[in-house]
Length: 429
Image (cartoon, rainbow, N blue to C red; front, side, top):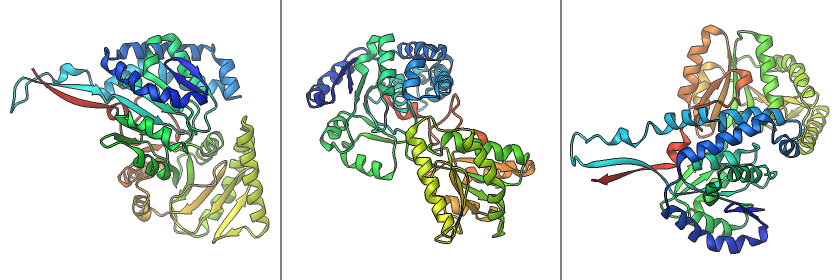
């Protein structure tokens, strides 16, 4: 389906709608700018309705068994207090702060922050509601937003945005949603041609493809695929910290950029990773068993991976020098190398030895993909190791159970998105 100026259209209407899109966008940009208060008021009302349970049936249809999680997630994203905090933090107090005359040069120059104009969002489908959240950020900065839905989108995005438009009809001309497949190069190029900025949630292959179709001068804003990992160097509370890490793996299924893919151990003893796996595997198995997936597709993926790993285990537990420890719907694989890499996900973790002296050199080789580190360490080591991880390029250092925690004022991959979606202009008075 297509959402176009507040109305739903079948996918077959895309050529006709795209041919008229430029005129509609230009008419909107030529009119009065979008009021930030209008967006905040509508988002706050939508967040309140979700939190009150008025959309439980909708959430149950698109995310069965996860209604409460999504309702809780709506508060830090949509409520007025959170949005106003983000605006103050990311954009400053307003244009009056820049009216002062510069110490040198022309005195009658005013500096203002303005929207880029039109944003083309190419969203990922690994988080329910993420595409709608990306559009909300574009609205907060006063941009017209064209969204290409991810293939895996369940329909939740369009329903969220339709409700936002019902609450504030003036937003209809700022939101255009297409279910265009990535293989439709002509359709993608038409959307990109209208963009002042392209917001891309994707990996290296997607980034290369978008760069090829981006118009000259368009700002490419990449929220690319990142990798999370855990680093263990002693414990403050061994039992609690390992249980928290296992719970995080089971809850996220390692599908998020912040999820744990590799567990690094501060050791140069080749036996230590095997000892760790034997200790941690029962904890991980318990966590996975107690959190069965409500999504049949996720459950099938996990079962298939577990079956393949059991076959490998029965065949000798070794592949490329790796040793597989198979559990109940999960596994731990000891690897002889130190490279940070994507795991098999769905409860299947990699375990590698990485002594502190090698920590920064190894992570720097993956500097473009680093995101979240779960640091488990003895209290006296935590501050020093946190600093080392940050110097290596990690964006977030969290506790084991909080790797994927979202919070008010959070940056995206080390930068504030609202700043990326705006530009500064200068006007001589």
